[in-house]
Length: 603
Ligand SMILES: Nc1ncnc2c1ncn2[C@@H]1O[C@H](COP(=O)(O)OP(=O)(O)OP(=O)(O)O)[C@@H](O)[C@H]1O
Image (cartoon, rainbow, N blue to C red):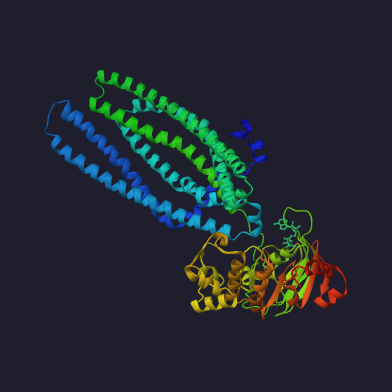
């Protein structure tokens, strides 16, 4: 049980839903995030000036209070009150205006920082390779992008502003205190080392607890995202109980981490107060003695005590800041871990632009292994597809067909050999150009939450209404779209939940159609469709393939007949290569696959 709580990191991380991020020293955190303050940096100086004005006004208010006691109350004279009262009112108005300016400027600077950082983290994560998303839990990534980012602002800006503010307060109040009575001030300062001792003792533990809390928050989002995202599977298999237990385990972990941190704060606060009150009482004792000796006026003593109270505020704040910093740095570490992820497929420096490709594809001696795995997903795969030609990739499940598509889109780079487009290695081309030249219709229908129109236009931003309708007609989707309650404005649920499999697929074809790219990748475009629906999308598919270099991946051989050449894959190797009729005649693996599916789809 203990290992589950903050403090038992080794055991905990072994089974963790989300492992802890590596520790980063505070200096490095500053170095990494300082550039994001660029937009608001010139406002930092006004912020400091505003910060300095606040304590000065406060000190002036206290000084007026001293005058009230010594010049009005003790001698029982109303006269001086007539100038003290308006002066006091003036100071209150002044402090209100300064407070407003200070609050607004710090909010602006802080939020500008967050604006830049959040967008940058999102841009960075979006640019990471598919491999990253296949390895990481999406919920945790979301929790970092939305939750942890805020804490970095505390670390860098509010934190630093507070330090400055406290230091200025300390300077102003200490100056006044020394001016009033240096001996009493020295006595009051005796307790400062005690403050620091307590702060040091607690801040390390609070950092541990905060780290654990952020990690558990990431795990919670990950589990919620996974089980709610797959709600149909969870309910169909009655796994709600299991999912709840998984969620509860992380929820309990977070609960304990939060309690740990609350307990530490709860102990820390009274300890600090105890130190503070002891110091205050010692000063009050000595001060009262000085009053009886006539070395101090009553107003002087009261102001002194009030100033001591104000002095402990920033000392307290400074020592507390350590714990706030440590808590925020736990989040900063999670962001840095994310920012340190490099895309596995990096663009080559000075890559030359490609423009619209002719569409010549080539796999040349490609070997590929997924990161972290031992067996080759592709071994020595070579083939060429001429512009406008159709090549079919067939093979049993797991043979490596989708892997070919992923390499063609440069989601991964080969370990050996090269994938070329128009004779140029994909690694030497800008990633944008590679993908701009390819349109895909994938195995899992990629439909997102939005209108039918938006889903089709996703293929080419800025497509006109006429283009969209023409693409839908060519994809044999126009009719069913017209019958939808709001036609092209109908909202399709996330992942196309409100459409049938065939309808989703036809939307995907329309999207590929509107993209009008020279290369087409069809990865199992008929998966999940019955024979009739499968046949129905053949026509739009043929229209889509016409005039484009096409790679069709299929293991049910439905679309394969249209291909001029067929490549048969088995365990990542090419075992046969040729035209449909030749392969049938040679009675090899293709002929066997063909016989297996002949009764079902190829009658
Ligand atoms: N992201 C991944 N990480 C590790 N291994 C993977 C990954 N994706 C696929 N593989 C492995 O690579 C091999 C080839 O998979 P691939 O998806 O290319 O097969 P496929 O021929 O498309 O199969 P199917 O017809 O079932 O879609 C399989 O052994 C699979 O387990």
